[in-house]
Length: 392
Ligand SMILES: Cc1cc2nc3c(=O)[nH]c(=O)nc-3n(C[C@H](O)[C@H](O)[C@H](O)COP(=O)(O)OP(=O)(O)OC[C@H]3O[C@@H](n4cnc5c(N)ncnc54)[C@H](O)[C@@H]3O)c2cc1C
Image 1 (cartoon, rainbow, N blue to C red):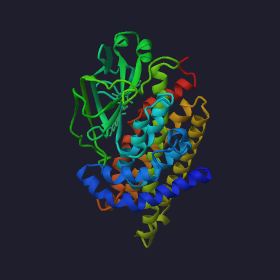
Image 2: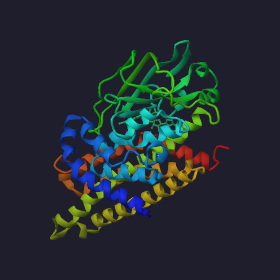
Image 3: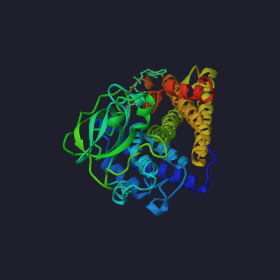
Image 4: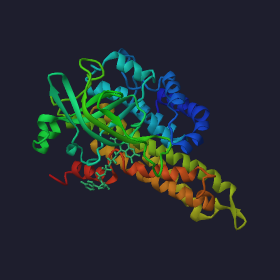
């Protein structure tokens, strides 16, 4: 269990009530059509102040802790993993933009995000580079007219329908340099939908997370808006190298993703706990058969352990200390635990668990991507090895 402050407990209750009342009725249709119902979700979450968390009050936010962002992700994912990924950029990017821009993000941009008026997407992965961010080929060139973006992104959540994109790119002059120099040349550029030369691919059909749209983006000589408007927030290697700023952002995102995995696993656990009490075999509830009861016991243990790891990493992150290892441990453990828990949930439900009549099949499909996105399980282990000094 988390040790929650009064404000964190209040956020949990607010989001749980909201998600149960307003999001649960939308899930079946969204999963069937593959469409994230943004118009029903974003303005309502914004009205609850959920996009203002971790944004400083002087910039129009409500402040708060990274754990609060995780609680929002977890509670939405408990209802639908796809919805939790659909809202992720809206929940995370306002405070991420404030961090990346050193507080210089344009007020109208921030206000439209906090009000849920625009839907953001975070675009780092490319057809040829996912785990290896330094290998991305999307480049930004300084011209007499302004910054021009060329390249392509793949597997972008909200890609097909977002209004504004946080796009990772390398400065053109660093493109052919050493890895170290390329890393310094990495940055994030805010790109509005609809610019000349910016085209968007169709939504992909996926194993899970079907109530969230995922797709490709193409940039062909896209002239970014000048000045402090949407083009303003970017990181270029001044105090921090671009790569370090990106890593900070990835840590932030990974904590949300760890919590999202916990939310899916929590739903599978609750369904299993209920089912083992009701379903009978050999004249007793199946929970009385040790092999089944023990699965539920281990689910509870893994959920508690995952939450403890997330809370520790959030506290370290907010404290400003080095926490790459703790974040990686939280993301690795929570996402793998979710795969195990949702798989056990299907097993516990027997044949029913394999049908669409019971939500556990969806939880099982949705959990898998947790070990792939935002840094695969292998990459998390590589980070832990590095932080343990194995590569020194
Ligand atoms: C549904 C979905 C939504 C997504 N949403 C977004 C999004 O919104 N924004 C975004 O930017 N990206 C998004 N992604 C992309 C995701 O973050 C990447 O898929 C992920 O980072 C892995 O990159 P890759 O797929 O290119 O795998 P690769 O990097 O090609 O890796 C393939 C395999 O090789 C392994 N591997 C690679 N390097 C190493 C190494 N050094 N050591 C050990 N093993 C290694 C990996 O662990 C993996 O198993 C999404 C993906 C999915 C499936």
